[in-house]
Length: 198
Ligand code: ITT
Image (cartoon, rainbow, N blue to C red; front, side):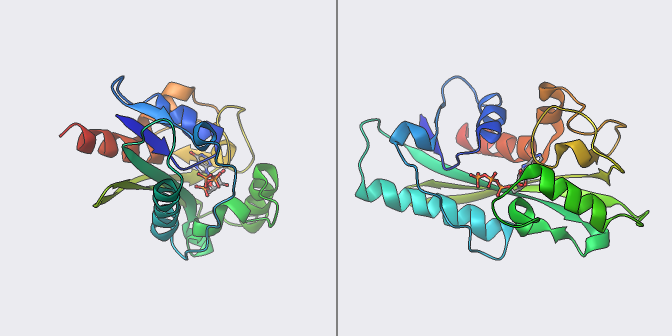
């Protein structure tokens, strides 16, 4: 099966690729020469995942590709921090403003939590999948806490600040396989794979 992932985030592509069985060929937007930025205008993580998947599905119906695409999916993710009323959530990518910047986002998060001892948080991924008339949603959530300073160099985004429950290391201190085996995205992708193998 040729599955198109509606994302240009190379880190996400690498994480998802590692969890797919060999019979699923993962294609990215660059494989279909799609270079536009899809505006994430929905007010929820679910809404943005659906919006990205639907945009690309519609695009494919108008721009047939050389490679036959069987299905598409998109991932929208966010970090939800309880002491911040579950912000930044759907606004995680641009928390510190435009253009989106991981380091600036992490700095802003630490500043917002400066005198805060209640640091529990969760990462959430919603995958929206479309194959013809079949529309599905798969959610992955991992709970944890926000560190007092960035630690580690692996991963991307908020990984240097997120300590998953049951660990002392941040996601950025864990190796690729360990993060992928427990993460919000890993959970959502495993649900997608299970659905596809039914
Ligand atoms: P898309 O092209 O797929 O939209 P994106 O980088 O814009 O890629 P999102 O909107 O889903 O991705 O991400 C929201 C923010 O959350 C963004 O700042 C990411 O860096 C961050 N993020 C997403 N997944 C993460 C993860 O596994 N670890 C750390 N940060 C993550």
